[in-house]
Length: 281
Image (tube, rainbow, N blue to C red; front, side, top):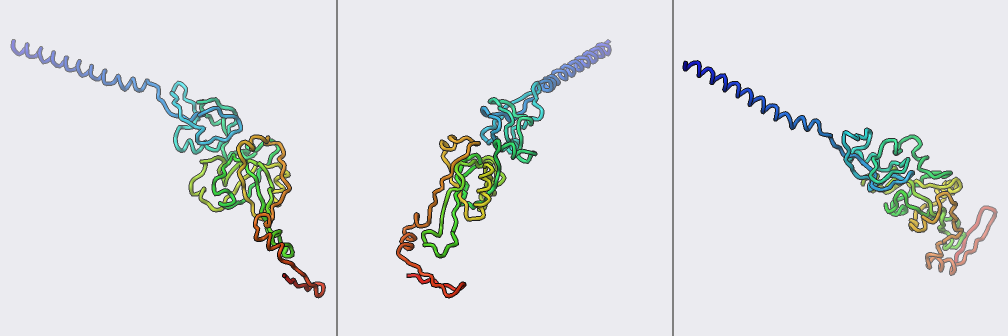
């Protein structure tokens, strides 16, 4: 009798144990099932503000926003350092509203076929000039700025007064900088590139202005001068910009050169068709 009671107790305890194990298994699996069923979120890059078609993306044009499996936005750039660096400098192909997700079809990136031609205004040309850190305003000029292009040249005229042997003139006025080296926006390059002493500046010009630049690079040294934002906005990109014919001579800048040219005289004596001498007094 005692053995039968003990057997029933053991069977009851075993059944209770199996029930407890089953209950724990069901409840421990519930959080995992809920996590699997919950939508997964990820951060993608969106427009920080209204972005107009044709503009180039700058670092502050991009912010991160959260998307879920319900609206995954396949192909959108993840909000990572790599994703941001890939988008900076890209051209917007259509206007984007604030916080609109940027998709691959919305942009054209540097290196894409036809990118530079798409950046240029109608009928405009792109031409590059070499400048050093000083004549390029030591890194203070950035893509999107408007500049004047000034030519300074030393004239090969030993017979001219000293004050008339160096001349400076404005070759182009109020032209847009498209790129500095290979960067099309501020912040698109690295510090090593920005510390280069020699830089290449690409300008947006008309066909006639392109010819002027091609001649100017052979004549002397080129310098860039930043145009104020108010003046830059006054001129339509497609409108021709008048260039003054005025010339600044060395004597206009240096009193010493001017005095030297006025106080000294020169006599050239010819002793045959190919022999001549100069006497200064």
